[in-house]
Image (cartoon, rainbow, N blue to C red; front, side, top):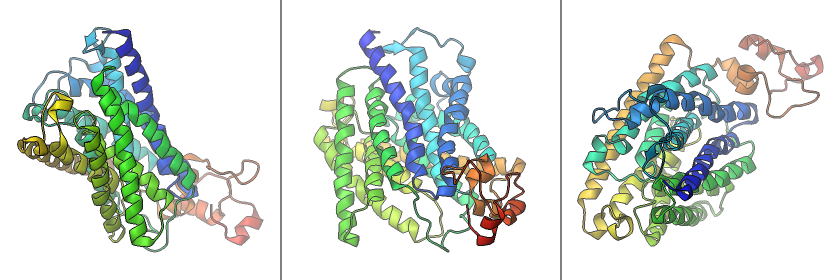
Length: 432
């Protein structure tokens, strides 16, 4: 261990932890004003409910010796996790760094079910998902499990994080079903600058996400850092070109989405491909996610913030392209298809399919299990009021002296204890 390696990993851990609140702003700007706080809280709550689960049990299930499918319990309750070396850093720091990945992976799913899921049911799902889905998949790829033995390449989470969360989001959207207004009226972002701010902070945090996955301040971290800078640039340019060709305009939401898709796509490849390959990979990754988003908008699938198109499809693209562009002269591990090793692409495809199947089926079953003991969705009247008021008793944007102004009829229908709006506002029929 050296102080330089430890310092870099301390910074990287803080940067990745920042990504989850940043995700809250990215998502929060895309929903309607009456659901902005609830959407932010879906990300912030993961810091506690997934983070504690990781420390108490998840880390042990992911990173201790067990079977090819799951780790053991030897580090449960952080037993034996101390200042001893884990590679180039103390094990306690390795545990914390990996915990930040578990947190943001679970939080990503929230974008598929915003504006309609009961907060308590969501928290139960988060806690169970982190232990039953994320930890086993992390073990498969990073903890010495069967995909690691197979030779799957995933530098920082293309399968573990993005395919895993993207497919879980798809399952969640199917289980919770559409918003009551979906397909009947335009549901527009209420604060696009928040979304751009979130994208900027996510990109900042992603340098720790990918660069830190070298687990040391070394040449591999430098390569991952530079590739994390270059790939989203190419995705942004390609996405804007697709937008202009299709509509004649480039949009801010499209730009923010492109940045995230580029970051997602380079994640599995960050420490395995040459910088020029990262540029090509970033540009190519824009195409499938862009058209997946357009396709989803024409269906009845209410993946509200297109988590599957951005993270699922972007993660699949990145994982497969890692099998194409991996270059041993840069990574010291393996070549991909373009450098004489077509078998690597086959291994990458197996990893993608395995994670898709496990996460999709498992996530759907967890939601059905939660639904047996608690209601998944808020009532139609509560959904009309907005989840900020109904679930939290707060508003993102107050309208005078701290009062929450909601028509009495909506409050009675929702069973809320929040005070009704003054009579003058009730008469106007104003919504929250």
